[in-house]
Length: 274
Image (tube, rainbow, N blue to C red; front, side, top):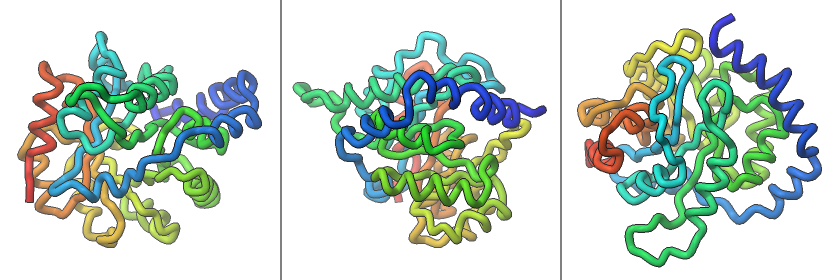
């Protein structure tokens, strides 16, 4: 069983049932209904001249281990926002990535606080990045204050993907629909998503190839916001994305490994301005 299969099996058989026992669906739905209005992730990305940066809060990964042991998720998100990130992704998987949905809720609370200083972050779209398989996870995402979430085509049937995408939209959130191949893209495009992510990381062996997203870009209509995910480390990488008319990029590990996170955000966010 590869890493992706292990993660999906754990979510289906252990994590989601446990979370539903701890907080029933009706309670989560009530919290989701009471959540503040969402920020428009697609509009935020489109407003950037060049390749917009979605900066990711990511403590660890199955392939690389702990990326930043001293990570403070809330302060890291504030640094991202203050240095030019158009949006923030929060990796919330616990057993495999050492994340937490609580991190996202805490970041949303920080950004919702009155901003008394000029360098404090204002509203910024938050994306929940996890392995979402069940409607319950959609509701808990909204309840935590997220504006968007990740839906991975590789782990969802056509029917489940359509159902979860529709529910996401009904709750006022955007969905970053992730694909890894032309075959997956062909399944996704009929659903008319506003946002498609092409992951350069093979989720079965975790190898990375930046060419993957560049090959898929011409197949995606220009009115769909196209996001390159993984394998982006330098200004040269950002320039390659810009040359291919990629709208946005999701970057985690390059920021987590950077000695000066704010400077790295600025480097990538300003890596290529058209």
